[in-house]
Structure formats: C-alpha cells, structure tokens
Image 1 (cartoon, rainbow, N blue to C red):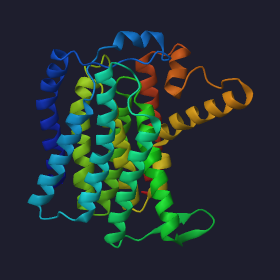
Image 2 (cartoon, rainbow, N blue to C red):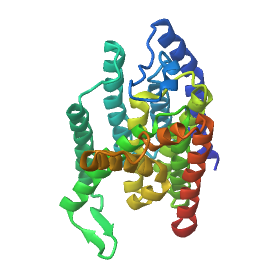
Image 3 (cartoon, rainbow, N blue to C red):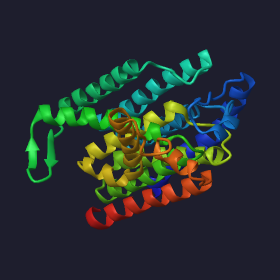
Length: 319
C-alpha cells in the first residue's frame, strides 16, 4: 500500500508545483481557449482561459510512472506500451491545441489528420503487444472467447480511437472530464491492485495523482483547461489499461458517461441527416442539460455520480 501511494504523491506534487507556472506562462503569452461559436452563448466568458494544461499532468504522470517502476525494478514492455499510448494520443492533442492557439481558431488538426494519427498510435500499440506475446483473444457475447489476431487488432484500433475521442467529447465543462477520469482510473487501479499488476497500479495511480492536482485548478470556475492534449491522452490510456487488464468491455460501464456523451453525438447526427430534426437541444449531451437550465455544477455532480455508480456496479458484479 505504501508503494501504491508513492506514484500518486509524486505525480500530484509535480502537477501542483508546475501547473501554476504553466498558467502564468500561458497568461503572459495571452494564449487562451477559443470557444466554439456553436456552443452555449454563456460559455463565451470562458474565452481566453489558458488551455493545454493536460501537458503538465501528462508529463507528471509519465515521469512518476517511470521513476517508480525503475526504482522497483519492474520496468517492462507493458510499461512502455502504456506510456506510448498515453503520450502518443497526448501529442496528437498537443498538435491540435497548438494549431488552435497559433491561428486563434477553434479548429485545429483536420479530422483526417487527427484520425490518421490516432490510427498510427493504435497500430504501434498492436505491434508492440504482438511482439510481447500478448494473448490476442477477445470475449464476444454469446460466442465465448475468440482467438483471432485480425479481429482483435480491429477491436483494439476501434477501442483506442473511440475512447480517446469519447473523453475528448466529455471535456466541455469545468472539471467534468477530470472528475470522470479520476473515477475511471481509480476503478482500474483497484482492479490492478487486486490482480497484483504493479505496472498498471503505478501507471493508474500516477495519472490519478496528476488529475487530482489538476482538478484544484480546473474545477469551476476553471483557471485552466486540459485541452485535447489531456483528454486524448486520458482516453487512450483508459482504453489501453482496459485491454491489458483483459477487461476491455468493462470500459462500457466504468466509462459509461463517456459512452453516453459519444452516443448523443452519433444519434444527433443520424437523426438530423435522416429526418432533419434534432433529438437533443445540443450535443454532447452535457450541453443538452445546460440548455434545459441546469447549472454547470449540477451537470458535473450528476454526471460524476452516474460515472461513480457505473464503476461501483462493475466492481460489485465483476470486480
């Protein structure tokens, strides 16, 4: 248990120390978030808030994971796969954020550029897993365990790209994606601890420590946003952890809010293109509740409770 606390404390301390410096630097450079025109009008007051804060907790998490596992002589290929997934998707988000800030617009990388980058990182993870003799098997409901490298690779590709984007969609309110990610990573930390998978324990607790430190500055009213650098990294990391714990489907319940946010966007697009009508007042769905008159705090709290309930249900039934 003492070992478990060390990566958390390390990442928390690094984030709390360096994030205020990063915020000060971004304010000095007048680099702030550009709020999308189609978003809620009352979000316009957030324009100019420093962004890309995810870079700080991402680096804090990676540094803490590496030095703790080196110290414990437990550095292996799984460690590098987790780091590559986390950093790889974070770098894609960093480029996206950088373009937005440089050109002072809400659109960064083109959709195909971002997707291509996400696919490349996923392909790299699959190749590394294959070289590490990872069991390319996937449980399919009503069919049982299926061992097929091609099918498993397609699934991993879909899972990594899908959940990196899902967390990104959820990052629309102060503290929402941060809080949901803390709950999800904490759930996997507990599962890894029960299974004595110390590499994943170190990684997940490092991420949690960074997120808790970040939340101090990210809760409403946010002093900084995580940006795509943070949200894409968090989603890619969650998907990778779920796969390497051999529990990929668990993310549908542990990350239920991320799933619902994504489904709301998909359903909205399908409905509008086929019928010309919208199901929700605005998507992702957290904006729908804002449009109904819910305060940002209320949406955050309700969504966090839903995320927590999803994790608790999973641990009770399958934990």
